[in-house]
Length: 408
Ligand code: FAD
Image (cartoon, rainbow, N blue to C red; front, side, top):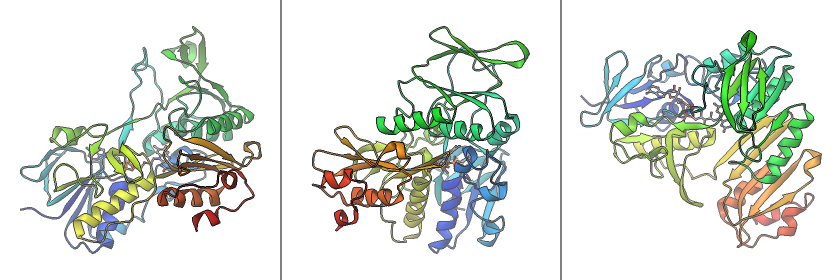
């Protein structure tokens, strides 16, 4: 018998979808299946407050532990879905059981990108995706430890800041010529390079890691393409994530760097939705398909799927946005960096509070990178959504000129 909604993946997107379904009036069965032993939790604090010992496990949970019972949501934790049978509309669980669905939501997130260098499969190293990873990392870090971080993306740099806070010696290795090369402008890379360096982090760019090996006394060794060798007590590899879309691909759903979905989070099968990090989606303000790894994206698509299933009005499409906290700096980014834009710097990076607006040939903001300038972020996000053309660049560049008039 077909029944209710089954959600695969009890993460930020899956847990939120269960809540939105009830909020939008869904009365049928909801079954939430997650392979981790935890109820849905927030990952952003794992590299920040949680690693520094400033947040407890309870602080991580999306909802109180009675929420799912109260909302009549059946949870299967510690349970992996091994297969989706679209013809019979069932999923097969790791314990051999099956659960039937009328609508399926796939929210399987992303997984750490494997590190394909010599020795990486044998040398113990850390990755950071889950509470269990974070527990292992936290348990291994001690003041004075030498920590090697491979990959200078947001998660790696947040861990660098937290590890400095904990009194460790930190070295970051980045293969590209600058940190955050794939996700941020030159101005932002320069700012965070200067910030981390001032906090005592050693940053090595153009640093191609060729091998990991074990030295004397449990030392972990990083070999670089310039033949130098660097010794550490602990290594974290943070070289990005891949979509956990194997299950969907095996079930014959359309995939390509994630599960292909429309603006209602619907896959190539009308009974199946996909949300969060695992999706490849379109955005109204940008050409192409995107796989966004962010909490706002997970929430937006959870609303889209819940609205489509219940017939509730679809959410207003948001400008994509993201945040990262490093030391005392709060970075907020709205929009996506695109080719053919000119960066307009507003404020002095040396002051620790500035923004970079990326303006296209028609005078429209396409992306706004704002460091500890929340009002710039809010205005930038709205201006991107409205696609307002012909903006006065002199106003954007003047940190004292209010942006509100541009919104009129
Ligand atoms: P996830 O939250 O990853 O959940 C997916 C779940 O599905 C996992 O629990 C997984 O075990 C489970 N699963 C997978 N396959 C199966 C299966 N076959 N059967 C059952 N269960 C399965 N975003 C921001 O916006 N700002 C930040 O500052 C930020 N910081 C971050 C810091 C860290 C350390 C990490 C790891 C991520 C951070 N993110 C941040 C990204 C954000 O957490 C993710 O975008 C968000 O969690 C995506 O939600 P999701 O539900 O798609 O995936």
